[in-house]
Amino acid sequence: MLITGASSGIGAACAQRLAAEGDRVYGTSRHPGDETDTPGVQMLAMDVNSDESVTAAIEQLVRAEGRIDVVVNNAGFGIAGAVEDTSIEEAKALFETNFFGMLRVCRAVLPTMRRAHQGIIVNISSLGGLIGLPYQGLYSATKFAVEGMTEALRMEVRQFGIRVIMIEPGDFRTEFTANRLYVAGSKENSAYKESFERAINVVEKDEQGGSSPKQIAALLVKVLAKRSPKVRYSVGGMSQRGAAVLKQIVPNRFFEWALMKYYRV
Ligand SMILES: NC(=O)c1ccc[n+]([C@@H]2O[C@H](COP(=O)([O-])OP(=O)(O)OC[C@H]3O[C@@H](n4cnc5c(N)ncnc54)[C@H](OP(=O)(O)O)[C@@H]3O)[C@@H](O)[C@H]2O)c1
Image (cartoon, rainbow, N blue to C red; front, side, top):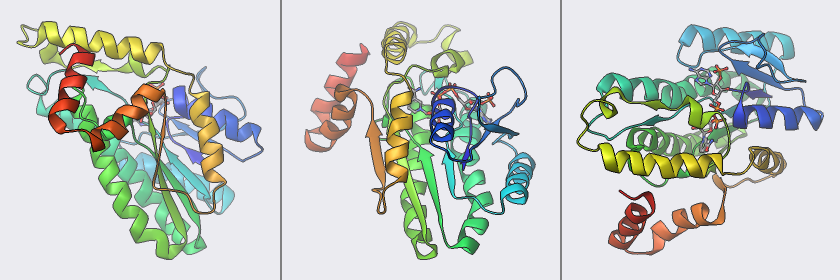
């Protein structure tokens, strides 16, 4: 089993839990061998932004184990800023990790999974992949892209005995908040400054007041045991999961109004 971004947060919690269940777990980090290594987990070096790095890590894993049963595509980060304040370079860097990084890992493991006629790919999306979040618009865009790619991939690889699943977390207490990048344009004379700061305050409070990522690890264990898993599993506080359901049933105008009021936009 391989979990990308296993040095921290959700990836570390999932890696630890699955290792405790007796699975052979490999985790990845851009800096393996330091104090962030997860105990009980074999850490591999991988930067999901690099073709060479992803290929080398997957080759190392296949050489050691001969197969890959499960891949959890979790590595990712967030950026905050108004859409207008986000430069194309900042947006591309985010897509490089959150979307192309996931695609790279999928493409690297699929030949081995197809040959074995089995495998499970779990892509970590977000409730922000179902709802465009104000001042996290580019982050939401990467996760909407993950949602679309994953839905299609799932249908394409079923013929090879491979199952593809998404987990959509709400707000969880991890290093995600501290690691979030603020776009440069949000700092200098942004026309959005006050509304942006109010919204991001709400976001950060919700994340740091969120549940432990152990809850996601527990869901992952359950999902991996299913013979016929669904395409998506949301996880998080009732109000956050409820918002994604509400979006589908109430008029768009009302949903937008409620979201803007909540984030004080
Ligand atoms: N926390 C939340 O509230 C929340 C909600 C919804 C979705 N998510 C999603 O959950 C996933 C994990 O987030 P988290 O909350 O656990 O955040 P985190 O604590 O900041 O952990 C992020 C992990 O991703 C890895 N990573 C970042 N960039 C990478 C790159 N270029 N190549 C390889 N690894 C990279 C980091 O590893 P190294 O730095 O060691 O390389 C780290 O292990 C992300 O995809 C995020 O979008 C989180």
